[in-house]
Image (cartoon, rainbow, N blue to C red):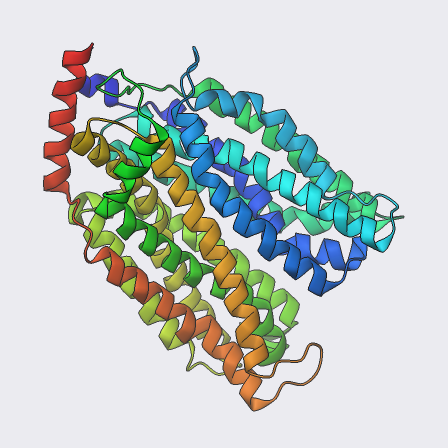
Length: 466
């Protein structure tokens, strides 16, 4: 079998790979959209205590990712380095997921301790399956184009999983929780958890690890850390990834405030009829359009980057995301059509960035092996997961700090200053995050011409080692 044939990925394998992020993203959406409400309104923990818990546990969780990456790099099994974690962590993931959304009868302090323990365990099992899953792409193929295709399938799965949750969660909670909302949450999460476990196992069964390092000797932890500390492209992508996720987090965290306090309820005229739309309906539609257009961007990432190159496509998408976000600031509450049209443009632009970032991390792993003779795929990919969590943590914290700084008060008519802050967060300030990402990616050096040489050199090295 030629190197080219070994690098080709079948449609079945691409779909199998995408199922893994469908599973992970169902829970990512549950964490970002439902967990805070569950803790405060269902389990009965104060919002301040939950906020502190999120900050502490997420910082630990982000720092935990590189440790998982290094552990995966050192795993040896008949299934490979990364696939075993999809198989063996699938069921624990489902069990801990249900426990996280359960409500044992405890004292106020006991509830908080339970939340700390179960949420920390949830983040640990999420890391234990998601870091190896992310790293898997780096050893399925060494073809940069195939990696972009795999990343696109991954994010189609990711956004589809998110859409499934946003479209069904409230209905399932109401269906299962007719007598008790806590039961509704627990049963609903049970459905998602069982589905996630099955999808992780299908990803394990439907994928292959093809690539092995050219050198058979094991590197030490010190070697891995020294190598990555000298890997300039890794630092560039780390910065770009954190910045673009701050952009996404600010938008996600601002949407409900933007529609509840600025846009409010609206009457829309269409084909001679008037439609009364609440701010809740409008915000739900806005979030669904945001996710759906992200999927369009993901689909466009491969053909566009094939013509322009990954770096140029990433840079252009970041710039467009920033510009379209800046324009959103100027729309009035009754300009619903323009508000949604800008959302479509922002969603497509932002969606293009995401698969490119993961594909570029695979290139960075190749560059590291080419430069040092040692491969640390898990460590490098875990850094992308770490940047994602740092980005979401910082974005969420910045959203809260800005609301307070502009004088926001919940469930009252907002001052002009508070409304200005809400509008700035979803538009200009979020756009600055996208601009920062553009600034980082502009100094990224692993373009297509450079990577072609890297891949060819590694191919010869791997042939010699076989």
